View 1: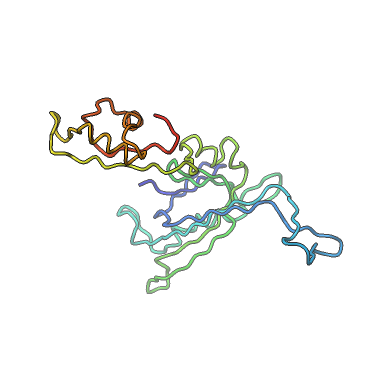
View 2: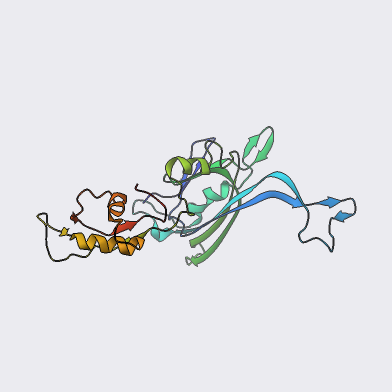
Length: 246
């Protein structure tokens, strides 16, 4: 399994996590705020909702919970303090980069296989230690960080929504569900093992169950790409109402 990592874009350095997170929380806040006047916030007893000012932009955040434990290290690596593993991630929240004479956290990219590639900065890091050595050195860490997307809009080329659209086909959830009819073996095996011979009467019953009449069995077979009407296997998909053959 591929491990989630942070790629520092300026230096090319990759910081790998010890384990992948069990959950990733992604939130989006649109660029809006409540309208203000010289007297303060605009309100009124007749308003159903506060008047909003659309400021543009917005904020996309990822919250990740990561586990680090020195006992989970590969056999070729040794550590006596879990902070040896997490301090590089802490450094990503420091103002260590300089852009136009201003200090800011370095621009990094969250990488997780081909499914995640998001540019941004780490704005918050919190670490909870719950296992310690006899000298007080922490051995296990639960690290929570907030990652804010910067640079590229999601729908523009290179953005995460654009990349998802290139790799994954869209699914139309408004399309009606496709029903299915079970094909029952009537006990007359065909030449090829695992298939069943279907009687013409049975085809009429399939059509009756699917469409309410026994005469549309050809449409049913065409929709399922079946060439031999008396020799096929598997369930029959029922086309949504009014839809022709595929």
